Structures are given as structure tokens and as C-alpha cells.
Image 1 (cartoon, rainbow over the protein chains, first blue to last red):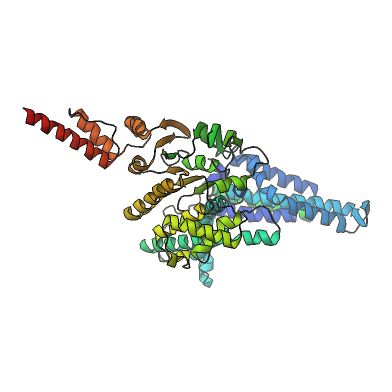
Image 2 (cartoon, rainbow over the protein chains, first blue to last red):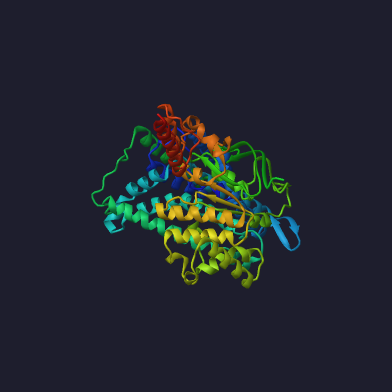
Length: 266
Length: 291
């Protein structure tokens, strides 16, 4: 159940997308999300879809993996669709009781479904092809400029990578504690809301203790290796732009111009 | 009638994904009431997965698990009752402690069985007595205890449910030699006192030689050997191929026998070995005297 979460998961594969500089992928994802919210017409929609399909094909990650992320937000998508379908004023399409479905609502609803799912697929594409370490490296280097206004970029990036690193560890720990308490007759599945909330105490107390214990150990281990923050710290694998990265930037610029033009025209 | 029986149990982790891994392959065996079984195998050989099948925490991908000839994989089987009969103490069980004091924590299990607070307390006190925790420690926070004591409290937490079968996954892992022996002796004492079935997994062949009456050997998800410790440790060359070993005394007796001493190689513990060597020494001295 918990292991089904795919957001933030890396899919090892050797492809052009995997080899791209993380900064390129970060900016690309941001631009893609912006473009998804800019389009209003069918041709633009076709272009976005084609670009996304091409990227997925290039990444060599199975499509089923991309779609898995959608499962978790299925309810949100459904609700958004229903809201736009029934609450947008316009020409009546059909009626359910006092609810009035409109043609305009159907159109906005469909666009909303498309936008939300592309948003998830687009960001899954980035996390599936980039290791958490690359991602934080990319963020750190890409946002280096913020150091000038006294934002501790390195520390924030370090915190992020530690947090990401701890997700699977804590999930595993939770699984273990859950089984141990189930072996003592604990019940996490039945009962009303209050009983269930109370039932979580035997799970949460050991989990918090474990998290604090691990954080303590990690801090000790980092200090033992003389970690002292970002000042003067060098990288084992410094990020370098390659030819393909420049090409990717160029393609991104072309893509954004096309999207902007289409929005202006239609 | 067997107490626990496995029939062609297979288990796949992450079925249908790229991370699919077969953790158990065609496991069949049965456990008789009142036995003391040692489970050995390299890290990742499937020991823990096997253990979790015994009280229904994991369901087999295919195959059947029976408890008192009842199929626990059948739908509608009461798993809560099964879990009270088959108690599992996981690795590092002290990490499951959560209550404000020792006594309340140990009462958690029996309370989950639907007993009243009073009855649960009686059972908790019995269990704490069995593992040797003193009365003045009942009101302490479980986090104030030493590592060995925490572990005993955690074992008591499972014992308080009064299971018929007690399963312990590496109960001595990460303890100093003193606490190690204490924990294992406590388990041996429990076995003698209550006559419950005990299944113990461990990395230490010495511990297995000393306590277990039957050994199950796991390798890469398969049950490769099943028999008396003497038989199994006699096949130490096969064990070594699986990254395991035999007790040091087995090696000693084998190398002595190779040198031409007439000794039994069925020896597993230090006391048995010293007895065997003394016997040979006396015999040779008597023969020398006759000459």
C-alpha cells in the first residue's frame, strides 16, 4: 500500500533524458507546467501532448510507471471535473436534479483533467529520470545566485536531500513497527475514526523515537567527517553543461515561443 | 497432529514490477508441538519472510499455511486469534516499546485480546516474572532501561499474550556477550517451564548448537536442510558454500579426527567436546597402564 507511491521515485535507465543536466530538467519541468496552464486551443494541446509523448519515449521509462502517479490524485481530478462541469454558467447540456451541466463546463472540465494529469506526468518524468542527489545538486547550483541575498542555498539543498533520503528508511521502519504491533494484536484497519486515531499511538511513538535516533546518529556521523556547511565545499561530480544541454535549452526556447504564439493567435 | 504446517509456499516481493524477487520457493515442512527449532540462513535467505508467514502477517503468493490443520490463508480465518497463539518477537523488538511504563507496555498485547485491565495486568506480571524483570522496574519508563532489559520487556510483551508458539527473530542481535547469554538462557528456561514450541532464528551457530533440537537451513529462499543439529553440522562443507558455518567445536573435532584421534565428530558444544577428549585421554592412559 505505502510502497505504491511513485512520486519522487527514480527509475534507473540509460537514456538521453537521464543524462541531461539536472538544471536543464528542472527549468524544463517549470516551463512545461507553465505551458500546460497557458494553452487554450486544440492545436496547442496537440503540440503539448506530442512533446510529452516524445519525451517519455526518449526517457525509456515504461508508460505504466508514469501513469501510476495519476492513481493517487484520481479523486482530485474527478472532483475538479465535476465542479467545473456543474458550476460553470453557460448553455445547458443536461440536468441532474438541481445541478446544471453546461457545454462550457464540460470544456473547462476536460481542460482541467488534462492540465492536472500533465502536471503530474511532467513532474514524474523529472523525478523518474533524475536521482534525488542530482536534483538537489541541480537546485543548489541553479539557485546559487540567491546566496547574495543571504539565503543559505546549500543548507536548504542538504536538508532536502536528507529528507528525501529518509522517506524510504522511515517507510521501512514504519512497516516493521506496524508488523511488530500487529503481532501483539494491534488493529490498524477497523473501528471508527477515534478508535483508529488512538490505534496509531503504538505506531507513531516508536516511529518518532526512531526518527530522532536516526537524525542524531546522522548528525554525529556528519560532524565526525568535519561537515561544516557549504563554505568552501567542493563536489565529487561537479555539474557541467554538455552540448546536449545547450541543445535542450534551445529546444525549450523554441517550444515556449510556439506556445506563446499559439496563445496570442487563438 | 502438527501445529504449524507449510505446503509448497511461494512468496514474491513486488509481484509484477521490475523489482520482483522470489523470497520463498516451494517451502514445505511441519512443526510439532513442544519442539525447539533453530532457523539458520544467510542475510536475505528468506528467514524473516518465512517467520512472518507463520502468523499471517504475510500471505503466501501460492501454497498453504496450516495452523492446527486449519488453513490460515482461507478468507474469513480469524487472524487476530492466530496472532495471539503464535507470538513473534521481531528483530530489535525494543524499538516497538511505546507506553509510559513497563507494566502498561506489556499489558498492551493482552488488552488487545479483549481482556480487562486487571486480567491484562496479571498476565503482564506473569510474563515479566518469566523474563526476570523485577517488580521495582514495573513503573519505570521503558526508555530508561538498559538494552538487554528493554529487549526482555519486549519479549514479555509477546509472552503476555500466552502464545502456544513463540518465534524469535535474532533475539540476541546487537547485545553484549553477557546480555546475549542471559536472553538465550531466559528463552531456554521459558521453553522448559511452559513447554511451548519455540522457533529461534540466529546467526550464531554456537547458540544453535546449544539450544536447538532441530535445525532448518534456508538458502536463497529455499529450505535446503532439515534435521538434527548433529546431522546438519556434519555437513559443514555444504553450509560453508552457503556462507554459513558449523560451531567451532565441530571443526576442532573434525581436525582432531583427521589427525588420527578416535573421537566422535558429532560434538557441538564446548562441554561435549571436553567430555569426549577427556574420555579418550582416560582410555589411552588406561591402555598405557596396562602396558
